[in-house]
Amino acid sequence: MRKIGIEGGRRVALASLAAVAGTGFASGRELTAFFAQLGRCAWLSAVVASAFFGLATGLLCQWARRCRAASPDEAARELGPAARRAVLALHRLLLALAAAAMLAGAARMGALALPMRLGWLWGILAALLAALLVNLGKLRALPWLGALAFAAGVIWYTALALDPSPTRIFLPGETVLALEDSVPAAVALGLLYGAMNACVAAPAALRFSRGASRPLRAGALSGGMLFAVLAAALAALKRGGRTLLAQAMPEVLLAARWGLAGFWLCAGFAFFCACCTLSAALAGLLPSSRPRGMLNVINRP
Image (tube, rainbow, N blue to C red):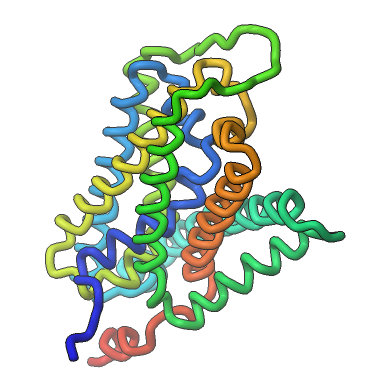
């Protein structure tokens, strides 16, 4: 019987996408901050962000294969002692901030969706349990979660974009986009978005880099998949108009057009993306998540 699996390069791309699902496109607020506020230049920023994310992921995999690294600690071992400590400390700080943000998102979804006292705490516990289970399985499930996050993200935002019904926003005033049509801002924000998410995805990409025979191709696939989700999300945000961009959670207002079903779909999508990113962040923070087989190869004289 043929065993069902995912090719090495696709594993890198899907695991990387799962790692950035929570920080990259879960709530819609990050999409407003980095892209939608730029007006017509939003598409330029999305192209720059996706290209930089894919390039960084591909180069990281190429470096990992060359030095036989399976974790950020091992990838940085060729740096000097001081530089290595500084780089790893900054990377762990970013992962810790990402994990904290995902736990806060899970708490918010728990408080909104669970009809019980301390719903926020149950949301945190459920997200932590899911992330720990993924790490106990040595991240083997992460590429499959990435495939689900990719499909869910494209379908979710495409459906929101195709719905012609108006978005109800009961707030007076007019939204002015200070960075509208600014090419320098689009390039700068795109690079910042790509770099931030590449750092969050680094533990997942390194974990599967050994199976990617063509690292740069895996990076190109990562960037292409991220752009597909971003394109659908930008189309959905455009459907809500400018006033939507000033709201804390624009995705919620878009989903409100579907009533109770929209609420549950929105909450479920946000919680799932938070669990994916939390799993990848913990992989970089917990030393027990490193694959022992790779360590044996590295330590072999």
